Image (cartoon, rainbow, N blue to C red; front, side):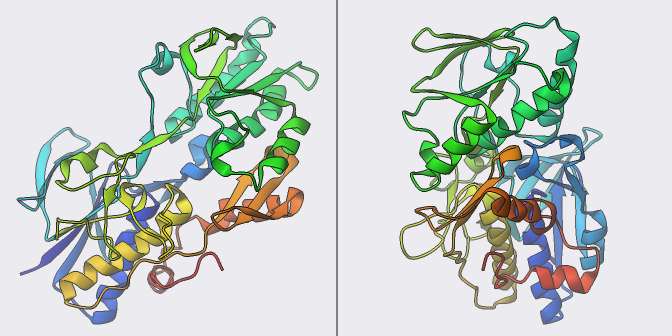
Length: 401
């Protein structure tokens, strides 16, 4: 009787899980295991690039790749997981409900931007979290020229001074001038509740980030929490008013809410605790990967970040190990001891760091060249050539040397 590995999610972790499972099954010559992947569309949304222009095009098709390696694609959205019954409830594009059974489940449904209950946030703030949201922001910026000139029209506020917030803010002066004219007096402000610039990125790259944003004309409001948002700007918790036609919320993410349907421990971000094989602790038939997995990267106490960098390797490991589990083979423990960051700083350049202390290695144009290579080559799916796709899914492949 055919057994089924069911992957939920077609992001970086889900795609690589399916390909890696197919690789091991192919190597073993096994014909009694089906790999199926459920997602709303057979495409990878390239979320790390959504701060850039052209967000609507940040998609990579996956159907041909899945066909080439023998992964069955099921179009739909998983609404319920019944771990005790080894099945999921799916709503198809035609809104018809169905049930899909599995022998092993790989949960790879990623994360979403966290939007707290701040008055006006949902209605008036933009984001770069999903393709449609980033495309909506892009269209809004292009329409600003239709409004009478005012300080509010020419101002963009980016709420959140983390990785995404900084990359987004660094792009905004040039995008505003493209929409409003090169001589427009534009104003880009990062509002952050922390008392230091780029607090979550640490002291290593901070001087470079400060230098770059100063050169680009981006300013900071530190120690400021957002209290409310409206169509003309925002008010901070200490009563400061910032008039702006464009407010972009980037402050924090949470794991997919489907993690709450798995009876297992989760961290503060909703990620499921997993062992070194990426099996959910206490649930033998469920593996978690990517942004829904709280996974140790090494033996030094470091855990995977909710990032593309970790999701790709987590996916390769989860796919291999879930297939190995059904095949009765030894797993390959997930390990990703080298940690790097490459932060885009718009027209100024970029900053590349290594290690969890984020020691700066490249800055400016040199770092920008690396960032461009990462964004245009490294993070994209392999071709729909079976041998190439399976080879790329090796869990021992070193992406960051």
